[in-house]
Length: 401
Ligand SMILES: [Zn+2]
Image (cartoon, rainbow, N blue to C red; front, side, top):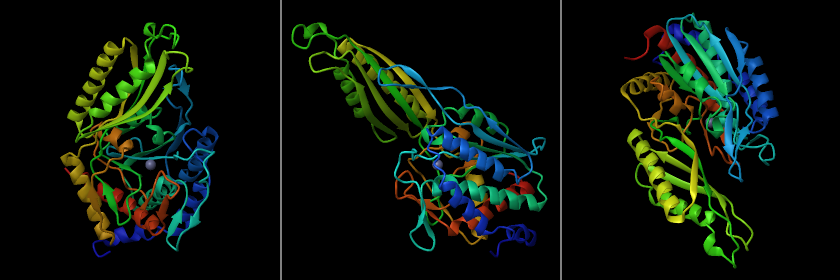
């Protein structure tokens, strides 16, 4: 840690691994799958209690209304938990946003519910890396920064629906990102401190195909087979994948008994465009395929959904923010590297607001979104120090311009 100034060492020394690990273990034992409203509500309560150690005002924001198309092709409201917002020094001229999520991908019914140690440093457990550990070290990092005579203001947003696309929190993210000089998001980094660089965009869609039913034997020619049309649409969309655009037809629902031409099918699919031009091309692919299939099969097609995660290419201000973070990591003796990833997160939405964002400020770990998820416990205090030092240097030296 030779690159540290004396006053930097002083507040960094207040960070201890014990409380960060204890919170991580306790929070990982609370199931907070996105759809487990009781679970995310319990997590929101625990987080509100813990983050009350910081100055500022904590509020729980109501989720925005969200709909999802069901198997009958009808939009249905989706329940979501409330989102935690902490505002510290809201009157400060220079402000930062720090974001995380309290939800995980594991529903209450999932067998993966508890933590165990794979070795002295490797904690295996649901949501350990993604991102209970990240939330815990975020708190420790901010608490240490508060010891350093802080002048920056900041908002902390911890949403309850990140793993399903942040549909009920997207407007809140955009509102809180406005006017911020930088954003830090607490998704996990890979072992060895590999940070995410550019991210593609992502959109989830449901195409509701409505045909006409008829008897399968007596007058099938009067029918318009919605299932076959949906399958054709899946094929055409899939054929459009290329470098810069992934397409995943994921599920077809609907159909009818064997003696009936089906009049309803719902095709669910995901598309990930790499850059803004790819996003425009992806939208054109959908429009063309839908029009062609509707005409060829004489069916009606209504597409629900959209590109809720815009692509996150890397612009110069983000390069400079990464340089600041990377320098801080090196000064702490934890050098990092930066590489592109296929995943998406709230960093996409923040970048779309024109705010430079580093979105893998959380713990180091891996196998996320699987029963093998693990966290490297040694990264907890190290990454808390990184947050404290980055905040301090943004405060003293300003955002890199
Ligand atoms: Zn995550």
